[in-house]
Length: 186
Length: 381
Ligand code: SF4
Image (tube, rainbow over all chains, first blue to last red; front, side, top):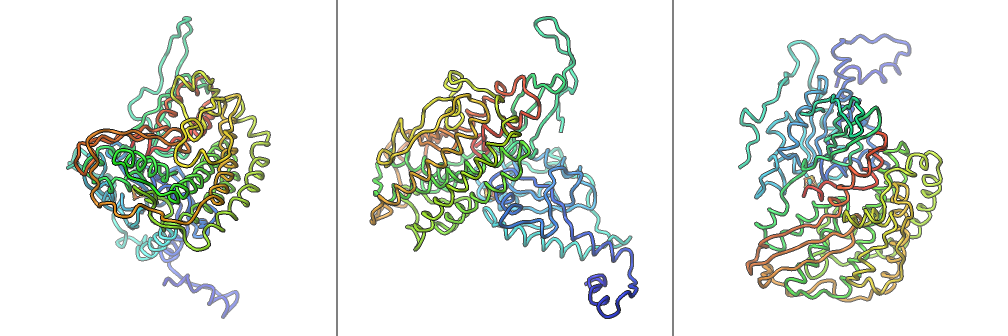
C-alpha cells in the first residue's frame, strides 16, 4: 500500500500536518483510481458492458466511465467476438489510445474465440493474438459484476506498476500485423 | 477511421451542378451504430447525399457452423444471432426443427414460450427506444428504459439462470419449468411496466425536442416498406398492418385478444412509438397467457439425444421484435443439419438505410439507424 493511502489516518492524528512522499508514489497511487474506458463492444457481451455502466450496476462509482473516443481513455474493454474483418479496426483504435493503456478482454470470445473456436473461418481465436491483454474475464457473457471485478483486479495490477524510470513496464508500441502471420485462420 | 475512401470528391449532378463532396466514415466502432456497423457517408455540407452501410464486421459463420453441430447443439448458437432477443431465435429454430422432425410440444410449453417471448419483446423494445433516445440526446430515456429491461432480465435469470444467452426454448418444449413465485413476479412486473410506459410516453414522446428530432425524419412509405421486405415495427410504423402473430398465427396466439399498433407517417417517431405501444400489447398477452396456462408437462419426454429428421426441408417463421424471423433447415437424414439459413429481419430493415437517410442531416442518420433497430449478430450472422 502506498503511503498516500494512509493520508486520512495521518491527518486524523495530526491535523494540518505535512506528508512527504515521492512524486512517482503519488502518481502511481492516483492513476489506477479513475480508469476511463473505451467500450469496444462488438457482440453479445456489449449488452452486459452497457448493463454494467447503467442503473443497477453503475460503473461510475468505481471511477470507470465509458468514453467512446480512444484518445480520452486508459483502458480498452474488448467485449465480444472479434472477426478478422474487425481486427484491424480494433488494433487501430488501440494504437490511438494514449500511453499508459491497458486492455481488458471480456467474455470467452476474447479469451479463445469461445463458442466460435471450432468450425468457423472468420473469428479471431482470442484477442491475445494481436493485443496485449492485462485482464481476461471468462463467461458467455460474464455478468456485469465480473466486469467490475475485472476492473478492480486491473487496479491492483496498476498499483504494482510504477512510472519511475527503470520500473516502467514496457509496452509494444506497434502491434503485430496480419502480414506478420498473426491471426491466420485454421 | 477513414479506411480507403477518398475524403474529398468533386461531383457533377445530372443537372450539371458541381459541388464538393465530403466522404465521412462512420464506424465500425461508433457509439451510435448499435454494434459494428460501418456507414460510408457522402456529404454535401451537412446533408447526406449517399449513405452506404458496410456490414460483415460480426460475421461469425453461424450458418456454416450449424452444419457441423448436432441439432441440439445448434440451439445455443441461435442465442448468439439476435443477442438482444435470444428467445426469438431459439424459438424460430425449434419451431422449424419440430416441423422437420415432427416433434410434439406440450401445451404448457407453448404458453411458456409465448410468455418469455413477449417479455423478450419488451426487453428488446426498451433497448431500441432507449437507444433511439440516447442517440438523439435524451440519455434520460435510456436510463428509464434500461431499468425496465433490467427487470425482465432478472425474471429470465430466475427462470433459466442466464441474463442474456438463455438457451431456454428447446426442441420439444422448454428447458425448465417456472420457479416458485415467478408467475406472481411477472404479474407484478406487467402492472409496473404499464405505468413506466405511460411515464416514458409523456417524458419522451410528448417532448418538443424529440418531436423536432424524430418527426418527419426518415419517412418510409407503406409501398416502399412492402417492396423492400421490411417487417416488424419498421413496416408497421408506415401503416402496414402485418404481424405474423395475427396474419400467420402460430403456437397459441389465436387464443389471445390483442391489437397490432400501426403508425401513419412512417417516420422515426412513428416507428419508436409503435414499439412503445407493442409493449402494452405484450403486457396484455402475458396476462392472458398467465391466466390460461394449466399445469402439465413442460417438455416432451423421451426425445433422443441425437435427433435425425427424415430427409427433407422445412421453413418456419415467427414475429420477433425486429420483424419476421425465419429459419430454413435442410436435412439429409443425418443427425446434423445439411444447411441452415436465417431470414433475418434486421438485415432486410437495414437495407432501407441508404434510401431513408438521403437528404437528411448527418445527425439524423443516427436517429434513422436507431429507429431501424438492427442487431448485428443477426445482420452478419
Ligand atoms: S463470449 Fe459469448 S456472449 Fe460474449 S460475445 Fe462471445 S458468444 Fe457473445
